Length: 436
Image 1 (cartoon, rainbow, N blue to C red):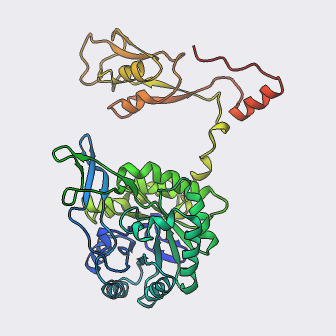
Image 2: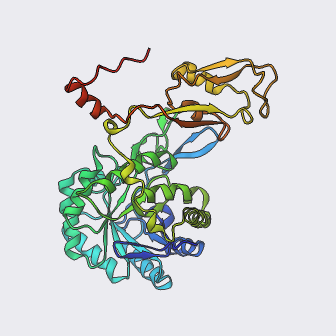
Image 3: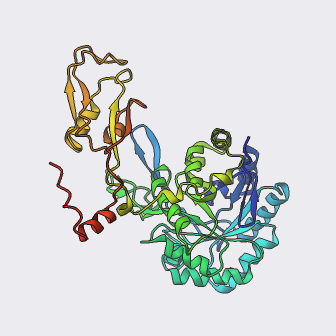
């Protein structure tokens, strides 16, 4: 069994699974429940000057049969006093000395940053996370994403925190920015020990068509909220990889954004994360999801021959390249397993109307009958010579592993777009003819 313990910038925990700052980390009661279930760390709901929240606060985007594929909130930071929050952090840390307890902070002045950073250390927190990401409510007050969207301001406020810090400082970055690496570089320049990303994305998930006000609404009006949940995972993975690959950042990363199971966590770790933080999935399914996460990640690491989770970290980072460096002569084609084909013909429809017209409907004789197929009904057949390897048919197919993308040998040497341009400039080749 692989060792799942981690060390993120000096913050140790028995596994990489942390409860993210948010509703599930609002109280000592919840932190105790999380640790009892098996979570390795808790990032406390952001502490600052107490606020007053509105009602209602949440909305969601459902997709097909999946509830809360995307989750939207207009809830702000903790509505409890700093005294209460810090007292409970001390209580939790005393009871769980080997687990990570991180204080998330958001205040306005240099003096208040000094005060809250010192306060966090005094009560035994293992580290602090500076919340520079909230896209609603707090940014209108000059905090949250109003800080994270301006690298110069990020650098200044991180430097204030570092002046008082005696424990590791993590900077939580906003995705509501053109290039997140600029903010990450600013955090690094100011002396931050680590970064966490992503925070929530500006969003409107739906409009109530009865009253024509977006959800959630408050007395007939609404506001843009923070978007999270499984739908944001691709955006989060992209930004995590960008920071992990940037030579000017090179900070430990706590990955956040749509993590719901061990596979999601493994992908974040492979793209450079040391710890992973989960919020929406806990709100949906409860703390006990971590049991499957721990077991699944352990089994995966064992299957790969890894003895610890650190061996997975960052392995996928160097495989991301700019488009112009990809091999133009590499070829994959779609192949159909007719023992699994159910004859729905979605692949044909998708290819014919939405892609490259490389699939025909043919007589089923000689191809066998998969489960649920109707004898005599035409079935799809890929014209391999015309297949461009776009993957669409395999993505729309409702049967796992019925359509697989297979690499084939073209006999052509590797050539990227950069290589092609260089050869053209030297007069060594003619322009590539367009697809007929």
